[in-house]
Amino acid sequence: MTAASAAPRQPDRQPDRQPDRQPDRQPDRQVWADVAKGACILLVVLHHAVGKLYVPALMGEPGPPPLPGTDRAAGDGWLDPSGLALVWYELSAALKPVRMPLFFVVSGFFAAGVVRRPWPALRRRVGTTAWVYAVWLLLLAAYFSVERAMPLNRTQDGAELLADLVWASTGLWFLYALVVYVVLARLLVRWPRATLAGAALLTAATSWLPVDDLNRAAVLTHFVFFAWAAYRPQDVRRLAGPAAGRPGRVLLLVAGFVALLAAQRAAGLPGSADLLVLAVVGVPLGLAVAVALAERPRVGTALARLGALTLPVYVLHSPLLALLAHAPALLPPPGSPLLALAWPVVVAAAAVAVCLALHRLLLAVGLDWLFALPRRVAARAPAGLSGPGSGGPRGARARTRSAADR
Image (cartoon, rainbow, N blue to C red; front, side, top):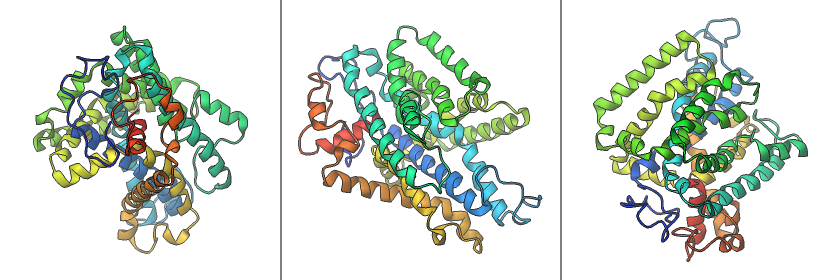
């Protein structure tokens, strides 16, 4: 991979022709893919800003806000606290079938070549992500054992910490899932159709399983998206083709998604089945929007660069948002509806900017091991597995980006 600060790479035209020379090359590193990742991490931060800060600040508690004018509502109109909280809560919930499914589709797309290679070629890829997950699991467990104001899943003791190494329950579940998904996809690569059918069935059935923790359930429900892209990258390329970003197609997908969302609300499907059904349109919609944004130089370049740095934003944004829970003056102003309406977007953008600045600072002081395998461990990887950009003066940044992609 390229350095973290560089623009996205152009496609590898023949990624599978010479696997012995470059076993860690990524298939079709196109701008739209990094744009999609950048948009997804923005949506993740926005989702957490809404659910963990915005709604609790306006309503006094997390969870679905009531309709304006009802007994629990704080006001009768949509610009009152209840109305504002409900608008953002529903918008964030509606984007669920796009946000993480698209994130895993892009991750699976980049892993398409890797899951077909010999097991030794996976050692560094899996090891890097597993290392980063374990490091940040410990760091955030310590941090959130002191910070108790923001509502989120916390590891309460050593037993829960060990349990999270086996099955993630915290906000770091995405990193854990990437490790498990790559290994599973490699194990089952000879049976792609059966694997996809089984993964889809698992997603649809998860709501009926005795799994109460939402993040642990998410580990079960999202494998189908990763596996589909890893086994069928040609389908992803087709959906993200040059015509995908045309305004007419994007509007058609938006209309289809809204109609399907309304139908689902009327049908009352369980959460995991709902996710699977809506993602059938949500993922193509996300890809189409990414292609459209990639064609706009300024927006596309900015999102693509952010997409190359999703890892530091992912691990750093929660502790940063938690600081706001202790600063009431910075929470949504109840007396200014317009400012309150814009608050989640402003906070999400500011949090991302601070995460990137903090990431640069941590790399500058030699703490790149927070985002990649330590140099000594990485040096022991089999020859040829380090991938482009892992050495040289920009190696630390390149390894950080590699961890994010993995």
